Image 1 (cartoon, rainbow over the protein chains, first blue to last red):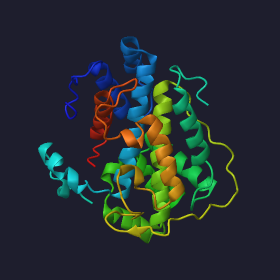
Image 2: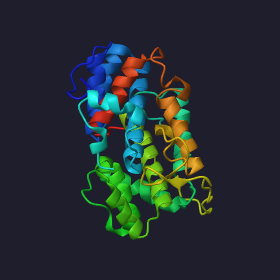
Image 3: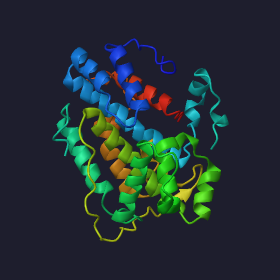
Length: 91
Length: 207
């Protein structure tokens, strides 16, 4: 679901998925349609909170990839379960 | 700031953005305010569609461009090349911190429907020079300090590390709640983690 973009099994999952997709793939325009759909479904406070989470992971992803952070050893089993070999990531 | 947002920011996140913007555009540990603001311009140019770094910004501009547009494509040999051409690892680390926090601020502001925050006239105050004396190169491309869990990866420059957490906590969850699956605020932890995981997947960040 995370990899495919399919609707997650959480309340307002479809709207959250659309917002994450829009924020993660378009860097020049606001996600007007997706934001407004989430506001309509779940309210302004919910949508603003979700935008904050997506925005802060734009930060964390760049920090971690920018410093060459390896996948932590305790997460290696989870990485393998998700289908990739953490030590194969170029670092 | 954010007065013209279509969707109003929550007070704690408005305050976090205000503080971050003041910090980002001011002198840092090793970079002057003018240098940090050039990093911001170069990162924003990358998001706006520039396919290559600004040639007038030198190696620091290259780093800012690729951190903004393709951080997942960076490799150890690329960072070593930056170093060979004059961008030492701690100045590179500060550039990572600036582009990272700028991402948080700009993506948040844009998604709320507000105008991009304008750069102020840069201060001429000198950088602080503050570096953690225990910072050392271990298992990353930059010096780190002690534990290297995600919100601590820029702690070799202590003010940058604090500034990351000053954004990370109000935007995500308090550090004490990171592992709490029962956390619930406006969003449930499942909803929060879905947004985090999907964003990370789209950025090809597999930390």
